[in-house]
Figure 1 (cartoon, helix red, strand yellow):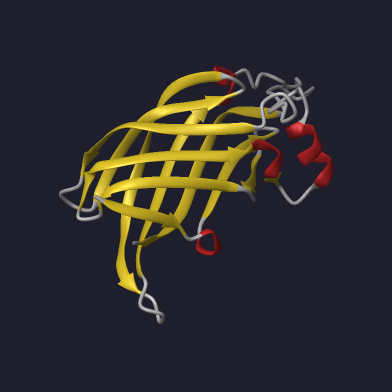
Figure 2: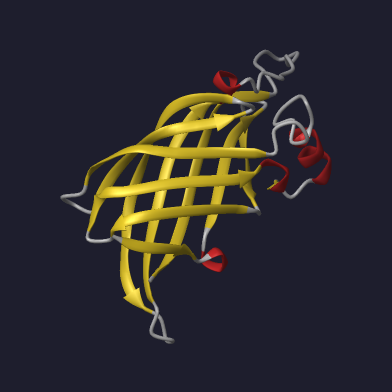
Length: 174
């Protein structure tokens, strides 16, 4: 069983959601931690916990970021953390896995699945063994109490329900 230490300088968690039903807005979280343990050669043994500081949301627009931190969305004051705890890891024959677990946003917990692709393992110039992953999944934001919206006079709504979540993560194995 290996210990995995998150390499924050080379890791990111992003999201994308439809805006006005005509384009997408992207953003990311600036402050998060991921703890992972298991055999790096058999990820079906892995256990994953992600903790994201909800107030660290960043969309390149401070007014929008403040709105997303407000009671209309994440209510970051009352619910400072978004978490994911894995329950099972499946697959792996081709370097692709599914991680199933419990995502909690605004104190609402739902089972979600993320597709994981192993990027590979390598030693950095300082001799540290690293392993990298990409992941992707989506959630319906309304399932987690993120229900704010506005009707548009042309039809449709301001914010789509589906939120696509992606990330690229590196760990240092020790």
